[in-house]
Length: 431
Image: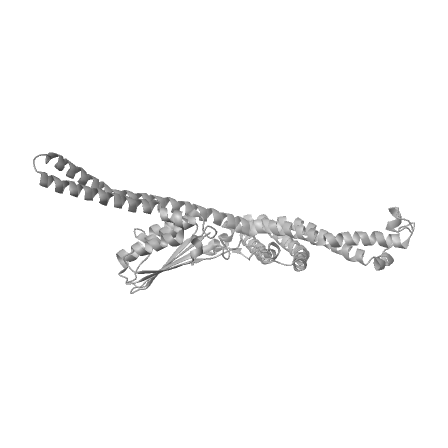
C-alpha cells in the first residue's frame, strides 16, 4: 500500500539548532495549511452530502477527497523532516481503462486512505492551532525576555501605572523588573528546543499515523502473512523432500539389508562361501545406509554450521559440489563476534546448498562462483554459473522452494538466467 525506501526505519541525525528551525517552520506553517484544508474539506463535505440526493453531491464529494489528498500530500512532504524519516506515500489506484464517469467518480471514494486524508484534514486542525499557539508564544517570550531592557521600555503599564514586576511583589526597581523579565525570557529560551520539539512531534506523529501509518501497518500485516505462508510452504516442501529421500534411500537399503540377512540365515551351515558373500553385502548396505542418513541429517541441521560457522559450512558445500566452485566469504562471519543469528545462517546455508544442487543437476555449467557480502543490516549472497541458463521461479522447480525459504526469513530472491547463460541467483536476508 505504501512505498518507502529500504531502511525507512533508520532515523537521520540532525543538529539541535537545525532541528529547532525545522520544527519551528513545521508548526508555524502548519497552522495556515491546516486552516485552509479544514475549511475547504468541511465545506466540501457539507455541500456534497447536502446535494447528494440530487446527483450533484457525488462529484462534489470526489472533488473534496482530492482536495484533502492534496493537503495530505503536502503534509506527507513536511512531517518526515520532523520525524527524521524518509518520505513515503500510499498508492492510490485509479479507475480501470474504459470505465464510465460514475466509476471514475466512485473509485476515489472506495479507497480507505482517501477517507483517512479527509479525517486528517478535519482532526489535524485543532492540533495545528494548539501547536502554533504554544510555539509562537514561546518564541515571542524567549525573544522579548532576553532583550528585556527594550521590552520593559515598550510594554504598557497597568491602570495604576504599576509594572508586571511590581504586581508580583518585586518592587519599583528597574533592575528588579528587568531581572524578572530576563529570567522568564531565559527560561523560555532554554526550554525552547524541548517545547518546540514536543509540539512538532505531536503534530507530526498524528499526521504520520493517519497519512502513512495505517497503510504501513496494512503492508506490514501483508508481508507477515506472506512470510507465514512462505514458511509453511517451505516447511511442507522440506518435509516432502525428506520423506521422499528416506523412502528412496535408507528405507530401500534397509529392506535390501533385511533380505540379505534373511538369505544369510538360510545359508548358515550349508554354503559358507555364499554366506560370507551375503554378509559382506549386508555390511556394505549398512555402511551405505549410514552414509545416507548422515547426509540427510546434514540437510536438516548441519553440525558444521553450528560448530564452525557459515564460512566453514559453505566451504564444505563447495567441496562436495560436482561443479568447481569459487567461494568468496568474509572469514569474520565464522568468529564468535562476527557470527550472524542462527536463523540467518541457516537460511543462507540452505540457499547456497539448494542453488549448488540446481547447478550440479540442471545447469550444465563448468564453473560456479559464490559470493557472500555482509552489510550493516542485511547479508547478500550471489551464486553465478556459466551454464545454459533458463532457470526461473515457477512452482514445481527447485528455486520456488528456495524462494519460499528466503521469504519466510524476511528476505528476497531474484534470478537472472537468460537462455544460454549465465545464471545469477541473488539472495538478500535481513540480519
